[in-house]
Every structure is written in C-alpha cells, then in structure tokens.
Amino acid sequence: MATKGFVALTAIGLALGAAVWAAKPPRTSGKVDETAIGDRTPTFYKDVLPIVQQHCQTCHRPGQIGPFSLLDYQSARPWAKAIKSAVAARKMPPWLANPEYGHFNNDRSLNQTEIDTIVAWANNGAPAGDPTDAPPAVQWPEGGWTIKPDVTVDLPPYSVPATGVMEWERLAIPSPFKEDTWVTSVQILPGAPSVVHHLCFDFHNHKPATPYNVYEWVEVPRDDAGVSKIHDGSAQAIEGTVHTRAVGSTEETRRQGRPDIDGGIEYCYLPGLTFEDYRPVHAGIFVPAGSDMLLNIHYTTNGAAVMDRSRIGFTVAKVPPTKKFVHQTTGGEGDESPESPVGGQQQANEKLAIPPNDGNYLGPPTDITFKKDTELVSLRPHAHVRGKSVRYTLIYPDGREEIVLDVPHYDFNWQLTYRTSLKIPKGSRMHVQFTYDNSRSNKYNPDQSKWVYYGGQSWEEMGSPFLGFLMDRNAKEEDVMEER
Image (spheres, rainbow, N blue to C red):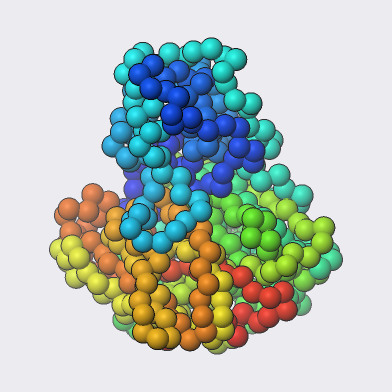
C-alpha cells in the first residue's frame, strides 16, 4: 500500500481482527460454559478470559500486532467498551466467509453466547471476579513467535523511504537446511509490519553464481500518473536492478546474464497472516539439501522512513510426514514458468480493466482442473483495495456444483486462510470469480475516476486464489492440477 492507496486501520480493528488469522493457541486453556452464566453478571476471570484466550491472545500480547494486551485483567479493563462495540457489531474478530457455504476448522468468529457474555460483562462495569476462576495461562513461545521455531533466518536489513512508489523486490539467500528436510510449519515476523505488503518465498535448487543477500527490484515503466505501461503491451518490466535503498548497496547497477532469482510461492506473509502449520494435517514441505530461498517482497511507503529486517522461522520433522503440502496460486503473484502446474496463470489478471465508477465489476474468472483425486485443505483469496467479493465453486465431473467458499465482503486488511478438508475427485474443476468495486462507495478506493489495471501496487488490482492441498510425498505437483 503506497501512500496513494494506503488503507488506514483503526487501532481496535487492527487489534481484534489480527487474532483471526492465527491458528488457535498452542494449548487450549478453557472455554465458555454456555449453560452456567444464566442471570449472573459475567466476570473477566471466569467468563471473558477463556474467550479471549481462544480468539484474541494470539495477537493481543506483548510484542504482537495488537496495540493492547489481553493476557490479564489490568490490560483488558480499559478497553472494555471498545471491545463490546466491536464484537456486538460482529466486526471483530472478523470472519469473512459466508456461513451458508463451506466448512472451516479455523473459524474464529464468536458465537452468540460469547458475544452476549462480553456485552454483559462490559455493561455491568467489566468486573474482574475471582482470580482463582481463571483458566491456566496459555504458554506462548518467546521472541514474538506463535510457533516455536527449530530454525530461524534473518533477512538482510532494508531501508524503506517515507514516500514514493516501491516496486517488488527479489532476494536470494542460501537455505538454512544443509540436509534434506521436511518443514512442518513456517512463520514470518515482519520487522516493520506497516510497510510490508507481502513477503513470499520458495525453495529452488541452487544455481551457480546466484547473487546472495542482494535486493534486486523489478522496474515497472509507468506514465506520469503512475499507471503501469505493461498492461497494454507498450513496455515490459526490467529485472535485476540492485536497489539503492538496500542497506549496503552503493549504486544502482544492471546485472546482465545473471541467474533468474524469480521463484514461485511456498508461503506468503500478507496483512494479518503470519504463519502456517501443516502438522494438524500430518504434512510438510520438502526442502532438498543445499537449496536456495528465493524471496519476493513488496514494501510500501506510509509517510515515515523505517528500517525493516524480517525474520522467518521453521519447525522441522524428526521423521518424514505422511503427506506433502503444496501451496499454489493462480492468476497473480507466483511462478509464471511453463513448468508451473498453473502455467500461464497471469492470463486472467492481465485481462483486468476495471472501468471508472463501476461498483460491481466482474473480473476474468479462473478455472482450475484437478487431474487426480485431491485433498484440498486451504483456500485463501487475494486481491487489492478494490476487491469486493470472491466465490470458489467446485464443479464435479457429473456437473454438480458446490460453493466451497463465498466471501461477500472481501477486505484487503484481513486476508484469511480458510482451512478445510475437501476430497476432490479427478476431473473436477474449481471456478473462482472475483468482483471489484471501483466506485465512490468503496471507502478504500483512492480514485474512482480512473481505469484500473492489473499490477502489484495496492491501487492496481489482481485476483489470486491461493490453494493448499495434500499429495503423496513423491508425487509431482504438475500431475495434480492445471489452469484453463
């Protein structure tokens, strides 16, 4: 989100919403007794604390994204009225999936009893109650982690300026794994979350002469209004510029004939999404010994110069898991190579041309065909600030259709992974449809009078349906799915 398209987040929205994207606490400490409250006044220790442990503390603890802590009564009490207002309006914690479709095992929305409990607590003076009623405290990992990493990687520092258009950065670093390794969870801790639009990475076989620890950006030719010249074919992106804003870089030079360091996507940090855990589905990501980590990073400016030094943490398996987790996206960010199982995936996005003042533009659809029986375990739609809605429809070989995810009110600020378990038979097709709002009614729209085309900036658009599925450990990704 560069300054032009910056999305402002309120403190309470950021605080309560962020917890939705994280997995459940590492140890469930308690739950609300839905039959025991009756007419009595709820108290923090007995009734409210179990709710916030389960839904909020992932981010509402020291060192996390939440601006206040909910670990104890003293920290929570001053925010009682704000919390009440947010949960009563069902704005927080945000859950964007239409409950009429799909089944998701990470649904963090509050049920009505939980909402009523918090509202009654706040309306009656937000009493503490008896501390001995409190459930055991959740044992959170140290250092800001939600997973407890076995291996960590520190990225080279990067100086983000106060203003200006920031194009995507590419970075290659050596993998920390010297032996064949199965990664079972991954977490990205952005050093400066306010300016990290996304941070994605993949593992690739090492190529000789790969430039390590050098930020290289993708120069996008733009007109005077900042519109990319790529969408109409009048120009192409220029790869391989060493960015002067990278700490330690002294000049901007062109690399001729350098190895390509553009990779696909194994995992991404996006606003509100910091980690993924494959252990609940007995899966992992296989990393060959001596691989390179290829990163795709997009910084945005927000009016203040900041230094970012992001970290990545991994847990690893002691014995190989039973399944391989595969993360693919289509239609947007990711691997565009012919070898990709979704080769040509940019095609739908490149057709994006949203007219001015159009509040319900139907984007080009994406269709993904499954060539084998497949178990789908996660869905995550990604668009920018004009994204309005998205729907995933599974079309079975016999023609039967099932809506597996419907997000009627997409929100760029809260990009959730919807975890499911869906058996997809061979020959099925996933049809994904995004809609966009380029009208005045979209409060995040920087300028409804402009045509909007595909691009990596937040004021440009894309529609990328991420998919996560399980495979046999030795299966090839390209044998499972293809985009049409």
